[in-house]
Length: 591
Image (spheres, rainbow, N blue to C red):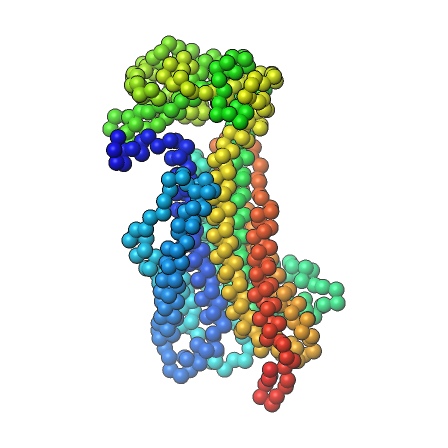
């Protein structure tokens, strides 16, 4: 074989690893795009709310709504183009390092090399301005509606937290998220269910963010006790008052936390729940008391298998070229078995045509219904020794009946692949393991069956959580820094009212904690909807009850990171701004 055709001989383990790595990169890119639009839109919405007096002044001196909108678009275009260029340079510099990390983590084979192409560079340059313009669309419309009288207002109390269009948009997004959640629960395949769950949470996150101003009030009232502190009733009152009178601002600050927590809970919970569900389903499919597996060895020898007296699976890789279909020489996993013992040990084995007991001799094979073949049909395979053999189909089973792709007599595998080693032996009672083997219970075997792949998937999960948490943490810090800068005069006024510097710092700390708590509660609620739909779908697929598994240390770490950055981003500029006690003057506050 030459050129791309050599890919047909790639080891199945490397091919699987490469596929997982591509899923990592694709999902990371998709999530980064969504999070970027979300974060930029939230930040622009917050800055427009802070600049209402400035925009009102522009309207007062003659600027039209269209001119204000064009000004906001121009600002977004400049920022997006500049940020896109910087991101391109930084990404190009870090790409080789990321490639090495993927190889070290096992997400890509050792031969993986980062190469540069023109189209990703061009896409990156275009993506920055486009994302910025898409994200600023809603904010620009809000900016254009600012009235000239806004420039004369001393107070910035919101007149109407939400308009009808916003309520309708949020309701549609929530409805779409609920519909996708139903699709998740009824999906036939785990891959499709995972995609539906991700889209459902994206829609629910967007809907919750749009409707957040309406939710802030009830949540703050619900959290009335946590924001109190012995001897600090005035601080608690100010925290609640600030959140209730500026629900849009509170919602805008909580939005990045909502996004970060929602994806952290969903992705980590989905992976852990799916892993546990498939392990439970795998264990439920086996009718055996104990299982003999290799002990720090690639497999079990025929002598070790004979000593166990159980039902053994002897796997080998074969190749088949289906007429009129690609790719050619498609690798398949063939299992050499004793048909009677295999039928007794497999609870889900369902024969739809033919008879499994006819699996004998050197020219028979059992295939799945997905091959669309009937008994007596010819089935050509190329074995590990390069020999092409035409086998005869003697039975057809359902697609979920086999832990591989097809069954052949054990003697056929041994004849064409003398180096094949047994992977699993089912035994009824616990036995003394032969040399190079160990005996485990069915639950342990089921949990260890895909341990290597589960490790890769979990690393992929942590990478996704890291991307979303990184974006969310930056957005939280940036938004709170903007909020602290805009509230300097308010905080000085509180100092003039008699509050100490420490009390003001406690005030902004409590406000940050409440905002993070609101975002975490909304994000957790959104993720819970997705996880419950995933659990329902998994229970239907594996045919057994599925427990919901949430890795609380990961979720706690993400919430703790958001809280830490929120507090630092609020306290540090506040402490600096209040280094000197403000003094009264005839025209306002000085210092």
